[in-house]
Structure formats: C-alpha cells, structure tokens
Amino acid sequence: MTSQDEWLTVESIDLEAQGVAHRADGKVVFIDGALPGEQAQVQIGRRKNNWEQGTLLALRKESSQRVRPTCPHFGLHTGACGGCKMQHLHPSAQVAVKQRALEDNLKHLAKVVPDRVLRPMEGAPWGYRKRARLSVRYVAKKGVVLIGFHERKSRYVADMETCAVLPPKVSAMLMPLRDLIGRMEARERLPQIELAMGDDVTALVLRHLEPLSAPDIELLRAFAKQHDVQWWLQPKGPETVRLLDAGGPILAYRLPEFGVTMPFRPTDFTQVNHDINRLLVERALRLLAVQPDERVIDWFCGLGNFTLPLARQASQVLGIEGSDTLVARSRENARFNGIDNVAFEARNLFELAPLDFVKYGSARRWLVDPPREGAFALAKAVADAVADPSLAPGWQPPERIVYVSCNPATLARDAGVLVHLAGYRLSAAGVVNMFPHTAHTESIAVFDRP
Image (cartoon, rainbow, N blue to C red; front, side):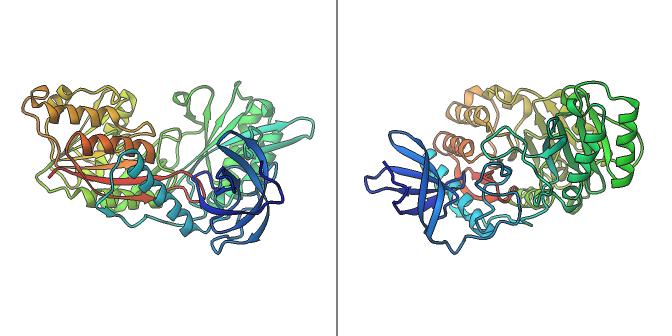
C-alpha cells in the first residue's frame, strides 16, 4: 500500500494528464496533477490489483515544464472546471505528449512506424474555441444560475465567471448570460447553450424544454442586440434548431486560400478551431498532391470542408457521407461557392464491401476524415479487394490516401489493416493540436502504395 509520506518519481504523463510513477514493488501509480521528472507525494483515491490512482499532495522537485494555469477555474480541487486537463503543462510539452501518444498507438497497436514524422500543427493556445456546449443550471436554493463546463469528475456545472479557451467576446458574456437566464420565466427548463462562431457571426443555441413566453423572447432579443449575437432556438433534437429572427449575416467560415466560404447551421459538426482547420485543410491538400487532371474521392466528407477546396485543384471530386441531410447541405455549399465539378453520394460508410468501389470508380487519391470510430470498414474493403481483385472487377486501389483522424487508437487500427493487409506504406504521420490544454489528439497520416 502506498503511504502518503512516500515520495514517488514521476516517469511520464498519460493523455488524461496523469503523472505515471511506480512504487518500490513495481505497482503503477497514476497521479492527477503530477508531471514527468517530479517527485511527488500522493493521496490515493482508487486501488486495483495492478495500479493505484490518486491526487497530488506535495512536490519535492518541480518540472521545468510546469506552468501557472491561466484560467482561475482550473485545478484539482472539488468544484474546479473539468474542461481542460493540461493547463499546468507548457503548451509545447502538451504537443509532445500527444505526438508520443500517436507514435505509441501506431507502434503498439498497428506495429507500424511512419517513414517521416510531420511537424506538429499548432496555433494560439487561448481563445481558440469557436464551438462549445455549455451546461446551464438554475440553483433555486441559492437563486443563482451556473453556465459552463462540468466540474472535474462530476456532473455538476462548474461555477465559471470566465473561460480562457473561449474567445474573449464569449468569455466576457458568461456573467451576462447568467443574469439573462436568471431573469427568464423558463430558467428551470433551459439545460444548455451551444456556442457556434463563424467568421462574422456569433450564434448561441438555446435548448428549451418548453415553449418560451413572449417576455422571454423579448429578453433574448434585447441580449442579442446588446451583445451582437444570433439566438437560435432548439426545442428538441438538433434538427429542430431555428433562427429566432431572420436576417443579418450568415453563419459561415472561410477557407480563403481556396476561395471557399462554408455556410453551416450552429448544430452542424464543424471544427472548434478555425485557424487550425485552415492549416489542416492546406496541409492535407498539399500532402495529397492532387494534379489538375485527377479525380479524388473524399470519404466522410461532412459539409465539404475538404471536398470543396479539393474541387479547386482536381478535375472532379466525389464526396461520400452517411447522411442524406449532410449530402444535401454539401450540395448547397457547392452551389453557394459556384463549384460544379463535385458530386456527393449518401451511404452507410460503416458497411462497405469491395464491390462498392466499382460503383464509385477508381481514383488515384483519397481523402479520409472519419469520426472517432474510424474507417475500419473502408480499410478492410480495400484490403479484401487488393487480396482478391475479382471482388472489385476493374477497380484500382488509390495510390495515396491522406487520413485525418480525431482518435489515434482507431487510426492505428486502420493503419494496421492498410499496411499489413492492403500493401500500403505509412509514409508520414503527425499531430494536429486542435484542442490545446485537453487530451483530444487530432492527427494526419499519409499512406502510399509502392
């Protein structure tokens, strides 16, 4: 049993921002708040046969990578905001942790090492988060409203007055929003406010469990005018969202390098970090190295974040997505940008067979950007078609695949299939720090067939 008086040397840090140490008998101890190289005393909270988990009590040697957290609501104490886990670690060291996580997943899960490690993609560590889902709770006993992320390891809403990862305009609105909700008749039936920022518009989506009264609507309108925001109302699921008052600029972000503007609804999936997204699109297309006479397929195309820029470079692009609604929206976005060399198809991308490739045709280059579940069915179908060409008559596998991932574990799983079963080489891989101060690891990988 680990004693609180025992000093442990922290050897590494995991993606949950826990320091990893070993006690004298070899048992692993995970320490909330400890960093590599530090000597720490620990308050053990959980014990299992092979490991223990606890919180930092004291430090005898402090890491050179330890920094003072910018946000006053960050910490290990009860009630602290759980939105960020790594604020006590220097941003460059955070990126190194994520790079190591990517390489470890590829090495241990896929038995693959990239030929080249790409330089990490980084941006501003503060004020970057253009999308957020903020919980709302009216505490009747205290007569206060809480708006923010959840507390660490809790379902309670943190008592946040500011947020350093939100844009300054939104951070400054947290207290006015609390005052607004407190004055509304429906304050006990408003569980959530979702933030979605475009380049010119700040949209707030109010989830309401009952119809709003006329006085409440007027309070929202007054707030919108004072703070220059758009209110959207969501009575049920995301498909029910509607703009409170029509008119004004559209919600959109731009990819100026490609002359593309991407309109979206506030409940659509878009990247939280617009600056990094622009860099990511630019790097993905540069790595794909599309020629003007080539055809490209964009799997999991979403609203066309990669598809439309690709259409500026290729002769033809096919975007494939699992939702009829998303495909319709992608077509609207193509028309909005005057792009006519792109087509979109809807199909279930988690159920694919080699014969599907015959339907969609051959393309020398693919862009793959799946959700956290990855693209296993796609990778497996490619491997099956390569192993037995009769399963996809006349089809040729792509020469290059650029895979954008939001989960290093599923990327590694799919990389193992592409390399060991489909004959690809992992030419390059690297991390994209889309979410500074969090454990979220975005990455990009390049696969080539010899």
